[in-house]
Amino acid sequence: MLYQEDYPHGGDRYRRPIRLDFSVNTNPFGPLPEVVGAALGSRGELDHYPDPYCRELVQAIARKEQLPEEYILCGNGAADLIDLYVRALRPRMALEAAPTFSEYRRSLTAAGCEVREVVLTRESGFVWEESVLSRLDEEQPDLLVLCNPNNPTGRLISPSLLDRILSLCDERGIAVLIDECFIDLADRRESRTTDLARYPGLMILNAFTKSHSLAGLRLGYCMTADSRLLARMSRLSQPWNVSVPAQRAGVVAAGRSDFLIKSRAMIYVERAALCAGLEEMGLEVLPSEVNFLLLRGPIGLDRELERRGILIRNCANYHGLSDGWYRIAVRREEENSALLNTIYTILKCHG
Image 1 (cartoon, rainbow, N blue to C red):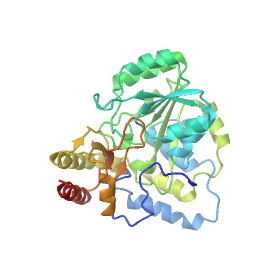
Image 2: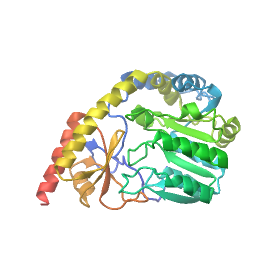
Image 3: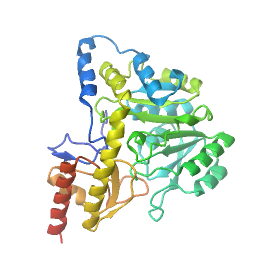
Image 4: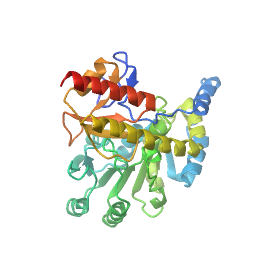
């Protein structure tokens, strides 16, 4: 748990009553009743320790990702695995995007690693550009961290550029971590799991948190062909770090690719409507390929919404962003309409 420090993420709905939460970007159409049922159905096993090898869960993930079981390690959410990966890899210097998810930097700096930034500019739409190749060549980091799709920008890296990045990093001996926790909700599911056998220095991270809306269960997994690295990560973790309810839920969720296909189609429609509604009010909305939007609005918009029981994500604490940048999750139609109506009322009141 956190202790005497500010909470750096969205979803803090525990300090006051909240009726709508757009600050967390989980699948608005989950969790599936069958997945919830699997977690609840494990209550008869709560007097037993969880399977420390996550056998059934690993088998289910291997089928989902079409990978050998020995490529997979499960953890207590993606953040747990990021921390284990950094501690096992022990990089001295890493490159990451600005802006991007803060847990990479948190784990890297805690391990004594120097973190340098590749700034994604507003003018480019916050996407990775070819200049990263020269940065890799010049600075020779031990690790490159890529969030794909990126959080909070919602953008995918160009497949051709990513090909060149992976090839260069392989040639230079640079480890690559690709966080694909949103890939199952992206317009184009361009996972790089097929590259794992080709690039032993590649690690891919995924989780059921976003795709199946299971943030409260804490269930993630990572994939690499480097079995020695996974063994080091395992030795650094607790043997029972994935609970019985999480394992049972994950087994069912891993087999429901049909649910993810339907979710992507519905998110595409709802995102377009939400984006159009925000733009009609004069707000600057960045293009997105996933289930959330990065936008520019009046400073204090988040506080005005919270007073009315609605949370959005203030992005001022992201490196590369500032006050007035917000991330808004795509929710169901009725929730999106309620958000739009409330923002309209706020903007109208403040002229």
